[in-house]
Length: 362
Image 1 (cartoon, rainbow, N blue to C red):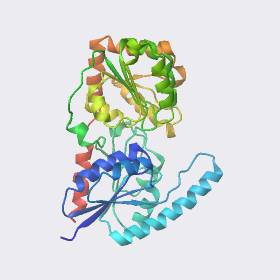
Image 2: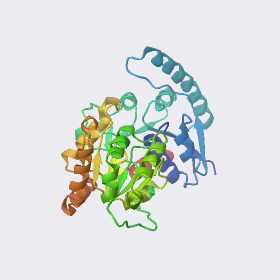
Image 3: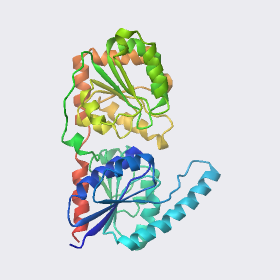
Image 4: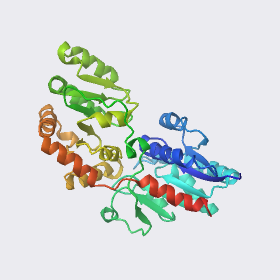
């Protein structure tokens, strides 16, 4: 059978790689489709894309632009130029019928090459503010799928489609094994695949109080895992077992399903919590591009679907009080979880796969 090719571009970070991984899993099941995923060679790309069978993984060069950093931007232009010519080679070789972009800087060379060759483009935006790369791409993309309702975007484009987020089957189908119930309420602390130092520090400062009342499952990232293990050793023996730190949680969906409360940045992981209707405390990263994490957090706060804390205002008293008010109130805990689940539309992966399949049939 002569297979038709689709390019899926998701690069560098988990927020862009994992959705493409989810789409590639499903599309690669179709016998008449050849799936090629494209990235920049990051560790998380290799971690996820190496799990895909019947999928080709290609690496290109791309540059990330930074505000007012002239030298970095000059290097970024050169890298993106290389990526543009690499993308030409890939398009000539594979002749893709359609290209899907999970927008960030790495998608730009592929997007402009696709425009040059007349290959249709579909893209997706995870945040409540359209990112810099997607602002460029949406000018000529067939559709830009968004995770939040269209009315919140101050964007003139008419090609926005409210699909909702792209989630893996573990979340959409709630594939859970050996669901664990702890003897104390369980708090899951997540800072993304790299951890979040500011969140880690505030957990460390109130760890004794937290471990006395709760089970604390803490993804620290590589940088802070040694400090976390040291803090665990300082705890009294009778509560030390209530603190479970790890650099990276492999089966994150399992831990999310077991948690009674989640503390996290306001990234696209919010949708994974929504799939399980979990109460959350969001601490937006204050230096995120275009303040997109703050915009995400505000959306859920406005829907009474999350408690939002400002990083610069954090203190041991505030974090412990906020946690206690949720976990010691069944009403508040249920209210937050249910509102989070209702505040967003899930199932974006099905809508996008259906749209991509239309182009593959042409």
